[in-house]
Each structure stands twice: as structure tokens, then as C-alpha cells.
Length: 489
Image (tube, rainbow, N blue to C red):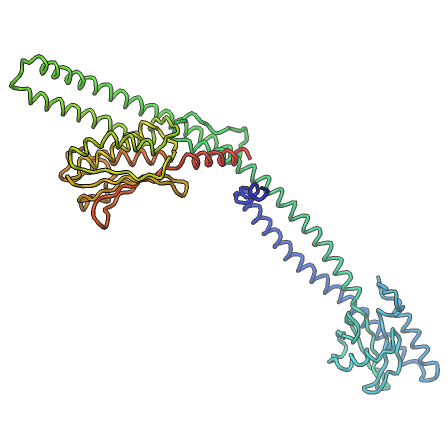
């Protein structure tokens, strides 16, 4: 349950922005620390080398001036012991007093002439002789049995022997280790705090953007009065909200004017057409025009076709402009299809056209029932008008991948070449068609307004196929719930 609740947050733009910003900050500060760490390490080593070089010169001068008698070892040893005690901030191990510094006098071969330090110095001398020594330049020596290397400075004296002064790098490593631990602790806290601050600020800002998106998504649907919550802020988001609200005001006025114009046009044209039709029916009923009965009947049919053309043209225009007035409700496509096929089956049987349905059962969508009835009616009308006798129409319905799929296919001649790419454009029809070329344009416009899609093609085995896809009712509800959670989360 925790992971399911966390997934939407981790998929949000605020999470990604915070993650990338924190990553950039973490890498940048780590690079700065790496440079600082190197500078501190070099500075500590420079100070250690300076101390070693100075002390080894002093010890070499003392050794050169001290007579080579029985007191030589004692005098030089005490001076070396005093020098070892001058190491600043020396960390003692608790085992030996002089485990951090050693003094060694030895020739090119043979045992050590003088040793001051922990142990007998044999391992130290062996490590020094196995290391390439550069004169007057301190060097690193790894003594066998010691986990930490020594920094050693050397000087030659008149008797041909060399004096070596070694300083353990334990203190330097201890300082650098403390520096790394403290930095990493502070670095982790700063990265975490930065991530929280960026995530909170970004989520708050994108929450206002989500409100704008939610309001914009309702444009063209049933709600044109929705507005973005305006704020008193003068930042870019506040300016965007006010600009979008002004745009929504203009859209609402424009759509209202479109509805007014279409309603007026419908009324102004349908009224005289209805009056003419009424007069023709009256003349036909009175029997005063027996010689013109066929002409009057034909005129009535043409008026009916003109009225249908007018209504469909206005509906297509409104749908193309995303201005259809929708009254959405839950619609069972299986029930709708079966009722429509029952209605059309007698007419199709009279023409010699067979029809069958293959349905996966109850499949529900959120749509305008009246418009959806007209969509199915147009699809079946298209088959009834253009299919020759002895053809079969198969209507199938299934649901998959959050979409309901309605397929109408036949084994007729199919769509004419040259118009298959323009089937959903207005006034596009076949050469033998007596329609106005608005049926499929109306279907495409209505399906698109409902968030679906429609495709048409010729089948390889012959015949035409039309496929309508609409979002399922549950998928639509889940999308609305996700949008609300994103806005108010």
C-alpha cells in the first residue's frame, strides 16, 4: 500500500525536478570538497615536510658537532628524543611513546649506528634502503608490519653515514578522516534539506500549474464557466493565471455567440422550410393537385433532406469547434448496439443485407446518449445506403487497454480509391452516393469530442471497416480522480 501511494509522487514533475536539482548540488559540492580535500592534504604534507627538513638539518648538525666518543649515542639520542616531542598535535597510540617519530643513523650498508624510536629499527632501515631516495626531498616509506606509511627526510654527515628522520602520516590521515566524516555528514544533511525545500517549492508551484491545466482541460466540454483560481502574486504563475482567465472569458463569449448564431440560423431557416412543407402537405391532402402529387411528394422529400443537411451541418460545425453541448451520462454500448441493430435489421433484410453482432458483454462509457445514438445510426445508415444486396455487416464490440472498441465491417466493395484518406472531411463522398458527405465527418467530430478516435480502411479480403474507440467509464473516472488528486495533493 505504501508503494502504491508513493508512486504518483515519484512520477510527478516536482519529484524529478527536486531529484535532478539535488543531484546537481550534490555533485557540485562533492567536486568542491574534493578540491578542498586535496588542498588541505597538500598543505598538511607541506608543513610536515618543512618540519622534517628543518629538524633533520638540526639533527645532522648536532651529530656532526658531537665528538664520536662514548657520550655520542646518548647526546644525539636525547636531541632526537626532544625533536620527536615537538611534533604538533601528535596522536598517541597508547602502546609506545615514540611510535609516531623515529630517528635513524646508518651507513650505506650494515646495521643502524643509532636508533631512536619504537622497536629495533631493523624494519625501518630495510624499508628505507629499498626505497629510491631523492636527496633533500622527503619521501614516503612503507615499513613492514605498519599499516600507516612514514614520511622521511634525510641528510648526509661527514663520516659518510646518513641521518633519517621519519614522521608517521597517522596524524595527517586522522585529520583528513575527520574532515571527510564531518563533511559527509554535513553534505548529506544539506542535500536532504535542499531536496525537501526544492520539492516543497516546486510542488507548490506546479500545484498551481495543475489547477490551470485542470481548468484548461474542461474547455470544449460541458463546463465553460470554470476559471483558474487567481492569486494576488505578481510572479509568472499569477500572470499566467490571469491571462488564461481572460482567454477563457473570450472563449466563453465566443462559444455563446456561436450557439446564439446557430440557434438563430436553425430557427430562421427551419421555420420557413417547415411552413413550405406544411403547405405542400396540405395541398397534397386536399386532392386539388392530383397531376402534381408526385412533384409535391418529391418536394417534401427534398425539404426533409435539406432540413437534415442543415441540422447535421450545424452539429458538425459545433463539434469541429469543440462547442458541442454535451450531456454526459453512463451509456451501455452493448445495450445501445442491440437496440439500434433491432431497429435497422428489418430495413437491411428488405434490401438483402445480413447483419450480426459480436459483443463481449456490457461495456460502459461516459458519453452523451443522444449523440452516441446518432453516431451508431450514421454508421448503420452508411452500410444500408452503400452496400449492395447479399452482403453481410458484422458489428463487434470489445474492451481492452482502458478503451471500448466498436468495429463495423462488411464484405462489400469498400471505399472508392482516392477518397479513403479524406473520409472524415466534410462534403467528401463517393461518386454514387446521394448523401451530403457529412455522416462520417459527424461521427469523427463527436467521437473526438468524447476523447476517442475513429479510423476507416478497406479490408484485405474485401469490404470496408470502421473502428470507433471511446474511453471506458471507469478509465474516465480514474483519470478525473487522478487529476483531482494531482491538483489537491
